[in-house]
Amino acid sequence: MYRIKEAIIVEGVYDKNRLLSFIDATVITTHGFAVYTNDEYLSAIKQLAEKCGVVILTDSDSAGMRIRNFIKQAIPSGAVKHAYIPDIKGVEKRKRKPSAEGFLGVEGMTEEIIIKALRDAGCTIDGVEAAGERGAMTKSDLYRLGLSGCSYSSQLRRRLAAHMGLPSNLSANMLLDMLNRLVSYEEVAKTVENLKKDLTKTK
Image (cartoon, rainbow, N blue to C red; front, side, top):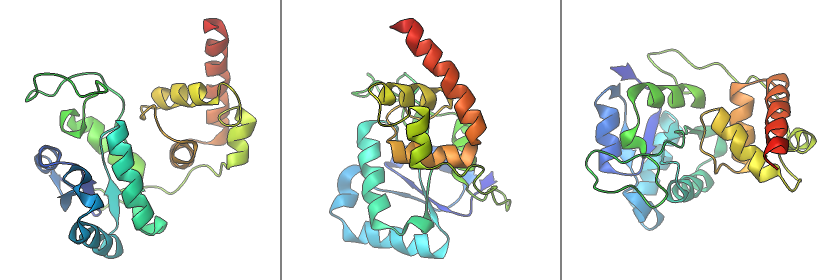
């Protein structure tokens, strides 16, 4: 069992049960969009954020991102971390057909993918605190690299996110946050240069 210091916020009961099969942590569910109207849920999340910090681990689809953004806006930025699962096509075993966007949710992820997502988010696992930010990139750097402000920026961000095992629908701000945690500016610049070459070839 992995011990996680932060409370983990997931969308549903199946996600919670998946995590608790190999993680020792406080895991609470939003019950989908119920967190929008249930003040008790939000109050509990805020209290946990103050006490031990929280990490949001929602599905990578648009619904998961909306729930993530709602909670993010309700909690002081220093108390919330973001863990992202990659876009992986598939269907969970209990379901007959895939989700609307065709991606596996948290419950369908392997133990290794989930633990990596929590480490990348900066969680304290088994008493070991994650390293701080590696980079110091700014929005100006994103513009300089072509990741914002250009006609092809959204496509380039999607390709960079996929290359890093992150959801393809991350906003520029969310991507910047993860880039600063995971890689240096030099690493990003080199990767983006290669991705731009691929973009040129496909045009």
